[in-house]
Length: 496
Image (cartoon, rainbow, N blue to C red; front, side):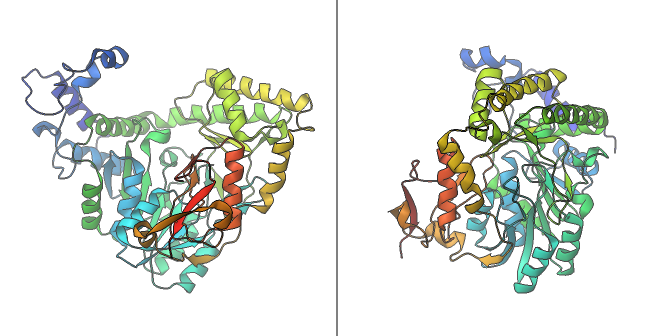
């Protein structure tokens, strides 16, 4: 298969350039009716390609032409048997994978640090979550990955589990022992589903960790827009082997995705595949060099630490294009540091959290970007040199001391929620003062965003540690989503 082809992109370009009288949606008629203010920002050419399912452009839900060809090229490029394009983000891929593998009341094994999109999959499917906490880095205060031992134990405790889903890599770029996990899962003759949203580039460079498919995943969901060159929201699902019910997967995707898919997004997937196949080795090599240069320079700045994970059962590799920097010894939370970098230096992190900032260094970054980032971190380092690390604000110091005692990810136990997510979603709820909520069943999905990992799950018993963690994040400037009360003074719980 000729990876130099871009069948979908080429067809879209030809359709956009073909004159004609349009009597179909969208109503702007190839950009002729676009508001002047919009055209002034984006130009008019892009709207000529904002087209619907014309005969020459194929149909996403019954592909027989250029979309089918583009998906086949993507499957060959990424090492899968089949590929499905997503225009509603990886979220719909995660939901569809659960719908394809689980019936109502079926059990699915999940890491406790899974993305909140899983909640929608559990509500729609009626499946019951069996949670395992990932291994936890006590020094850096964030979760690693599930261990093979913990998964094996959970499958022994719950032999009726119908699917296992893991995160590979994590938001911080941490990769668990997926090869061992795949062997364990397949020995139970069930599918391994992988949230590989942040690992779409792995397959294309020998210095990167192997992709989930290379380690034996049956289905993997990749956010092609996160590191590669697709437009925001454009993602892919890849399937390998025969453990996934393709009819159910396709039916789920048809139900979940818009019936008016954006061909701009679809074409960007075709183009991103072409780019990474034909130029990925060179571009990723440059990105890896920039990442290493950045890490070397940052390690020489006082008050900062660069993350180098210990090799453990929950971390066998780190994506070298991920850069996590601890800033707490500068007397700052990650949220405060992110604000300074953004406002004063135009440098914006992908993930600020309590103590750290995580940056994604992609093939599109330049040496100038790295220089500006170093300049910003050097400014933060001056806070350490000026004594900020020895005399941090009282409030911050209090929060740093609390972190060890309120981690929401501590023990690798397999547990069933008090109530299924689906039942909690439809249950009657009441609002209670937050101090009265420990022991109550949460009716809300409450999480810091990013990364979108729920601290409170619907149907799960609320703990004092979970509340303390959320209050700490909010106090230090983090954004909390999902709570009906933005102040966290109250929480919604199940009305018994």
